[in-house]
Structure formats: C-alpha cells, structure tokens
Length: 244
Image (cartoon, rainbow, N blue to C red; front, side):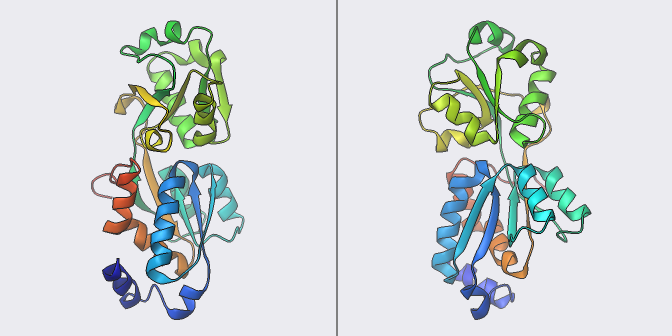
C-alpha cells in the first residue's frame, strides 16, 4: 500500500491539496462491497475522503454525462464506458474486472439442464435487473434468449432497478431464482449458484472505469493496482479480459 502511495505521488496523481478534497466514486451496484473496501484502503493510504454512489451502470453513465460531480466512474458495462468516451465526458476507459453470469437461489434446486428450468420454476418468480437498461438484466435476457427460454419465462420475471435489488427478492424469498453475477454469491451468503450460463450465451461481462477528474485518476490507478485487484478478487470478481 505504501508503495502504491509513493507511485501515485511520483506520477503526480496525488498531491497534498488533492488529498484534502473528497473523491466521489460512482460505481455499479454489483461493485458495492468491493468498492467500499477499496475506498477504505485508499483513504488509509492517502488521507483523502472517498464518497461513494451506487446505481445501475446506465443511470450512472447518464448522470455523469449530465454533469453529476463524479471524480471516477466504475461501470459493469464496457459499452456505457465507451459511450462516455464518445460523448467526450472522459478521455479513455479502462477494463478492470470481469464476471460470470449465474442463476442464483436460496431455496430452489440446482438446475443441470436449463431446458427443464420452466418446469422447475413452475409458478415461482425469476428476479432480474431491468432488461432494457441494466447490464445484468441485458446479459440475462440475452442468455435466456440464446437458450430459447425467454418467451416461456418472460411472464414469470420480476424486474428491479439493479442487480442487487433483484437478488434481494431472492434473498427475502419473494422470488425463487434470480439472475446475477458470480461475485454476488460473496455479497449474498444465503444464496447458492444453481446454474452457470455458458459464456457464449451473452456478450462478455467486462467492467470498465474512467477518471472524470484528475483527482479521480488517483482512485482509478488504485483500482487497477495489485492492491485494488486483490480486493476485487476477494469479492468474487475475475481479472479483466486479456489484452485490456
């Protein structure tokens, strides 16, 4: 950690003045636990205060584009990060993690063959993040479509504002199954993985971030550092795609 602090100072990403100003991090809901730990580590290393804001990646990207006071934005969707670049809001986006798409349950049975899932679900509910805007919802909708199940299951789906809100339905017993990320298994210890969606059933799940201000560049550097990557790994995230 001290080595990282030295490198940030040497690179001009952190100064005494910058360290005194709060750094605001806009992050996807699925990153909440990992970002909270990284924020604590960053505060301990730099003395800077970190303010965190969580929502769906689509909402965060739009808010930042409209001028919301974010210093760094961490999204669960490379497309939304690229959109911020195309809009001229940030100069570049960097991949910092990846994930697996899984079916989670608290009380339901494991699913070996997804073709049997409609019968297993029966009159239960399937919780998902919003399928039109939220990355986890879009990934889930795409995977179910590729498996030929969307038209059958659509009527059993309840949608939530973000993936964590969707999985709370499952955690509370209001839905039998939910679609989320493998990393959510760490955040929801009562849930278990019932099925892992094939990686070719949806676009790659790539987390990308960008510094919006110079102060944010220091936090982004921390996320990409070995210390930041270790935190992400502890919370169930996978490394960014090779070549990122």
